[in-house]
Length: 294
Length: 121
Image 1: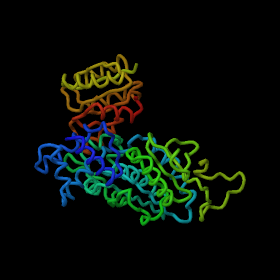
Image 2: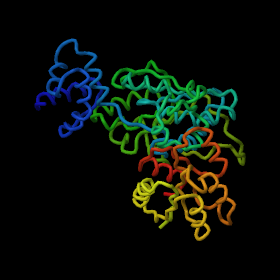
Image 3: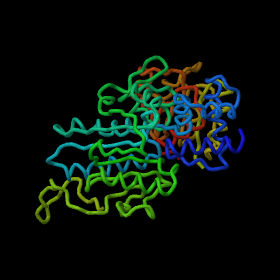
Image 4: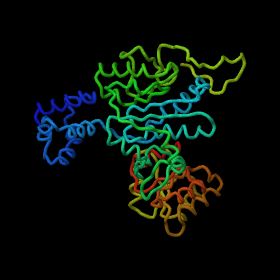
């Protein structure tokens, strides 16, 4: 692949997905795109780029972008964000939305589904204890191919052993030979939709929690700022934004501020009171789930 | 340094497990079957046990039941590591007091994740 070919590839990825591929990452392109090249009967990346430059190469361009932007995922990845979700975010939202009885969550880069299903497994435990409450999880990804796998909820033995406690596996999956499928009652808590974060997403409505982990790191500063600005417009004033450990809003937007106790959590900066805020308890009243400082 | 008893009738599996667990800073004691493992536990209880199911003399399930009846036998964290990969076996193991369950084949990432899950690392 010539430097010109590599530049063409980088420009294509930036335009279609926002992914900024560093100039020294040619090895990454080669490792991920050679299988695509073989599938399209070309022997090297130079020929692949030549095909990409041809008009009418849309399916090939989609395959290339998906191959470069798809990342490995596993259940309860990094653990801490899920602990925060269960122990901080959900209790706080239940306290705030005691009239609405509904919590909406968005996983912006769901990949093969492990993140939204991990959240669904946490919420599933609450469903029976909180009758009348509804928990909806929207899972989106740029890649239609990975979403197909995510929707099926079927994972290999290897995939279910990374991050998933054995008790949770037995409780939440059914076994089919060497594969494991998420139980229907958990699958139905998650809806999947293909979506490019570079495009308008205001039609999705408002969310109480947005998981956008390990997405911004691939964007340039302007794209990061733009995505964060638009996320701020769809997150409820009482809501939360969850970013990856290597990501921050600092220096990119004033629309969010870091949570004052929990790293990786961000809250809207406007500080508007929710419209259905519960009445303030009388002095001395013990409020379950209270104690969350934002 | 924590000790892990690796119980498997395959010397190859024991060697692979030893390499992984030494990399996680465990001191390793090996046993070829449940009887040897029980003798080792009577001498000194380890913090962790990586346990195969199918072995001659005494299998992993019988060993686990015997271990949990020993004085202090509820202490070691037991992680099954077996080709018995069906829900029925997993449920039996958990009922008998296993803390985690690895379905073979396994690799370093899986062992590390499961040991983290039970608080061994």
